[in-house]
Each structure stands twice: as structure tokens, then as C-alpha cells.
Image (cartoon, rainbow, N blue to C red; front, side):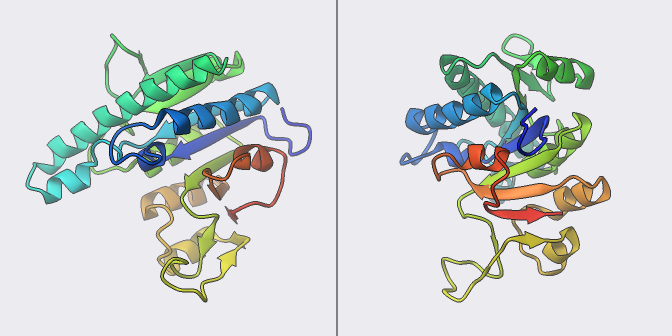
Length: 238
């Protein structure tokens, strides 16, 4: 447990696009290595960490459906993309010295474990990082919703959502120079103002189970460590 903040266990949500780095497709090894080093520092601080990763750098089910592929088929392709990303991140984490397990919501036993909640918690208790792949295992549910679900299931103290901006703004800061960043905002305000930092299902699930969410920009070096040390970075949703 981190003595500063009292965090014993956290869930980190990373988008697939975050792994792109300067590439147009796939995983930038420099990015995965940097993320792995930051996760290693969290583990070294005695905090247990679970990770949910998206697949948008390879396939996104909703986008595939827009191109004419059956939505359910597209979502299954997206789930498999998250497994590929999870294996890539596992490799980076283990090279950084972090013992890691990948657990998938769909059975791919030749390359990773099936997701079983009690087994996942046991891995965490043993100091292993756990990457949760394949979303919820169901079509029509985003990896944001999967992250909220896994955070609740493993009893995380905090869910950390890594994005491309340093928190939640009143408007798109790229398009509106007058947009202001919130230090803290409620679940209901996020939903009512349609701020779209996460999908509504994910926000409602966290709200109903009182799971706090911190929105941060993981492209800022050391951001994850600052969250664990209790610094007021990004935006807290609670």
C-alpha cells in the first residue's frame, strides 16, 4: 500500500490509441516501454495494479461496423485486438521486471488465462500486474465499461483513465481556447454535460458503486506515479 495516499489497488485504463506513439498503426515500442517503466514504479511502491487496454490502434468494433462489417463480428475482432495489445504490453512489463499475467474475457488459452475474478485478485495479492483483455467478452460494451467493471470486481481503490488530455474540460480544449479544466466533477455532471470522457455506461457503473475515477494524460512522463503519490493531477470524478 502507498503510505501517502492509502491506495492498495488501482485499475489503469489505457486506450489502444495510446500505444500508437508516432506510428499510424500498431504498437510503438518506445511508448509501451515508457508505460511499463511507470507501472513498474507503481508496483515497486507496493501498490497492486490491474490494467484494461483498448484495441483502437488495431481494430475498433464500432468503426468496423460503420464500414459494413456486422457489428457483433466487428466487436469480436476488436476484442481480439485488445488481446494482441495485452500481450505486447505484458512483454514490455516483464522486460521492465514486472511479473505480469494476461487474463482474457474470451477463451484464448494458448496465449493467456481465462478471466476468473478470484484468480485475478490472487495474482494481484502476489504482486503481479494483471492485464484484463477482451473487454467484457460481450459485443456492444466498450473497454471503458470493461475497465469500470474490472475495477469494481477486484475492489480497486481508484480507477485511472489515461487520455490524450490532462483532465476533463468544459469543452474540447483543442477547439475552444476558453475551455476550462475541472479539478473535480461529479458523475452526474459528466453525464448531464455530455462531456464524453468515458461512455455513459462506464460512468453510471462507477457512480452506482462509488468507484472514483481520475482522468490523466499518460503521455506526461511520471503522471501515473504522481497520481499514486496523491498529487492533484488531472480531474477527479467522484
